Amino acid sequence: MKVMIIGGFLGSGKTTTILRISRQLSNAGKKTAIIVNEIGEIGLDGDILTSPGIVTEELTSGCICCTLRISMQYTLQTLEEEYAPDIVIIEPTGIAFPGQIREEIETMGLSELSFAPVVTLVDPGRFGTEAKEIPKFIENQIREAEILCINKIDITPTETVLAVEKMLHEINPAARILKFSAKHEDENFEKLFQQLAVPGFKKPSEETKNSVELSEVSAYSVLYTLEPQYLSPEESKQFIEENLRKIQNEIQEINPEFVGHVKLSMKLYESIVKGSVTSSTEVPQIELIQTGESEKAELRLLSAVTKVPKNKLIEIVESTLEENLGKSGIVFEKEIQEHEHNIGNHIEHEKEQICRINILKDMKT
Image (cartoon, rainbow, N blue to C red; front, side, top):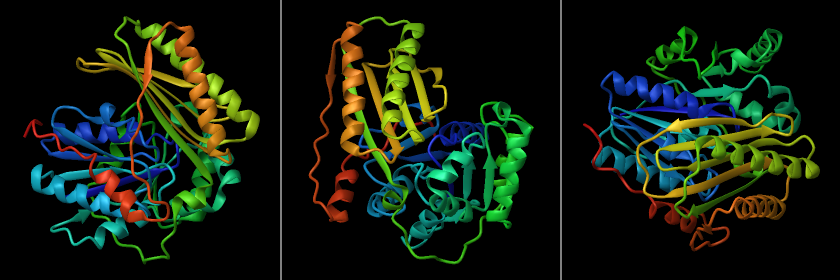
């Protein structure tokens, strides 16, 4: 079983990149599994990544490089026993240290594991802001990578891309640097796919770091179930954009230079409308993704932003969504997450995650 770890700061394009890679692997006849680690208690990207021939598991409420080690080990063992994938792709949270994840997996005693080179994605349009906000944190993600990917070059000025490339080389001169747009999946993106076929190498171990503490990121996620009613894709896109803009503006009042990721998705009966914003200055990005039929409509939000108190983040998110759902005449119900937390006890926290893992047994083999 080969493990691919594809990391990067919040909003760098990990989900889009992994979606492209997993489809290529599936088309090539490789049984592929994806482990998505969300920092909040509600998973958001699992439905988007799951497709025929690909199984997706979500680990939530923590970061797999420091607090969810038992959940990761359980998930990998279960995948190996019940699905036997050729390749497992791991999408860590945007605050995780990808090299540290590899070190943790290597100590789990799993049989016949191999590793692709560790990847860190960078959004060059936000790099300067990120470095100002959490320079040591971003620097650690860059230093741990074997491949550094400058994503979104289609919407970034050439001079900015070159400046970021120079900066990355100064921080990690040993890493291979690739430049592409994951959305386009062109010959530049194909280079990443080729590089991942090369075996990765083990870097010297460093002191284990708690990424949640070092990042100064507050996170909150919430799920609302929606009563059956018809919403056109355009109405849904407008709803997502308006809510993201209001949340962005209110967070900006607390931290005018925040970075992070606010992701909002509305699952309809045959599609998902997904939107995101990654800083105080970015325009919300909205996309429509066609899916198979769904039994219920949902609204999910995951937020992780720098230097905003968590209680304020919760207040902003819930008041915005619930007010606008009411104004739109949408009947909704907030899903309550029932967990037994034991503060300071990671073992209890990690057991909580294990009970939410369900292996899909009807995938194409």
